[in-house]
Length: 172
Image 1 (cartoon, one colour):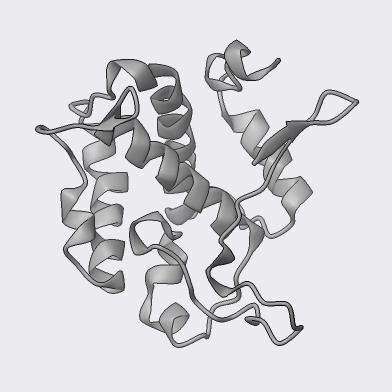
Image 2 (cartoon, rainbow, N blue to C red):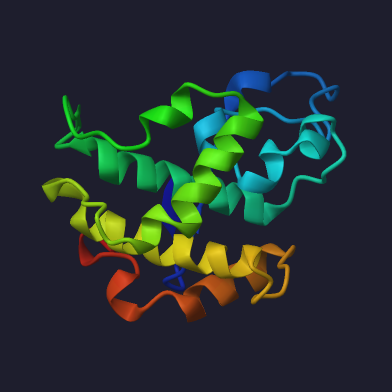
């Protein structure tokens, strides 16, 4: 869900109601839930699976970028592509296997320039690819760890080129 505030800022929220509850006994910050292909790489490690990694805001932001990547490369006009669909291997492995697949995608496939988004997702792919390249630099230790939502948003807006920021079609 996304909305625009009165001062022109965009606020986005990812919701996963799989574990929602009317009581206050819901999941703690270290439990792992989610759809594996869309989870942050840090949360696909054995330590994270064992509940030893704190869930941070940047994990949700990274998850959103993986969803955007998935849609940009696998769908055309709302329909799943019938052939030439990358990322199928992410569905055939467990969490640690998906971590390896996504790491290979991030450090090898993303840089080979052979990935092509569908015609209806050109702008989305520009945003997703730019963000993924920034995540790659984070994993290589070239960017400080960002744990605060405001700090993360500020950093991300500084790193994404202007042409990859929110498309005009989303600004109404």
